[in-house]
Length: 291
Ligand SMILES: [Zn+2]
Image 1 (tube, rainbow, N blue to C red):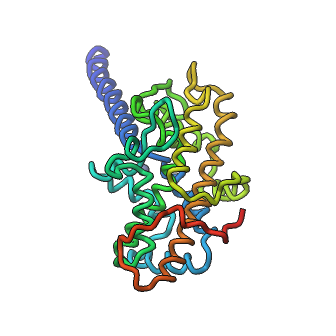
Image 2 (image 1 turned 90 degrees about the horizontal axis):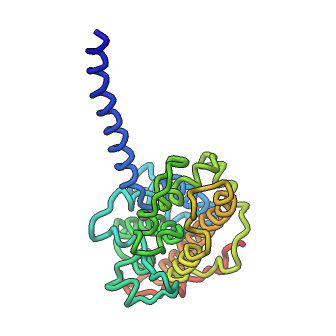
Image 3 (image 1 turned 90 degrees about the vertical axis):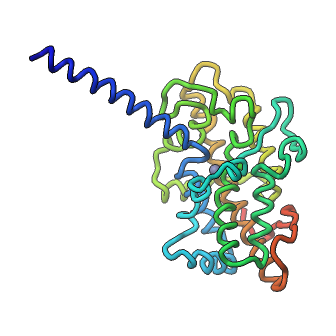
């Protein structure tokens, strides 16, 4: 009986470990960007920073899909990835330089920098409401992504996805640590996390809305000595980089709000402008953003 029981249990144990492995691989495959919490808190803080005009316009567009909020649409772009759009979530830099060069780093506009500029242009235009809502969904998400340092990292390790680490805080590679491991370690719900981010002092270039500069900042963080840990993760790593993580989330929220404020102002100022007129995103500087 005992033998039979063991014989029955062993295949089950094997299947269970395969199942656990499959689940963790599935989770890794979906670890595309800030985890859901990162995107949601960016959207939540951005919402609070919108001026009344932008808030009204965003509310009007969200009403096309009753029940949606800026926070609830923040992960839509990850949930609706296709081979054509998956390149919109990141940009790769060579290990030798964090200076963005469009021809080299974003051929054919296939990277997060060009995608943000394009979606901002659609959102500020008089395209249909449905198209502008879709552009809003991309903007809320992609402005978050470009502030995740490893979304502007190196191609040879797929933005840290191939830099394996021992299991720590449920993360298996450096990209996942930055997507969700460091956030999870802070251990706050969205409301408390948003409140914390609102108190984070913002860098002086918070009003710089050029997505190329946002990507360059992220790349420079990745290029810092010690960003790739030598010997697994440590308390010192968490201590050093958790404030960096919070600064990136807070900056993403402030810039997203400034971008939406400026785009809505442009939309309202030019009632007859047609869709897809190129709008340099650098021009979307918002003087009304509080530091
Ligand atoms: Zn993404």
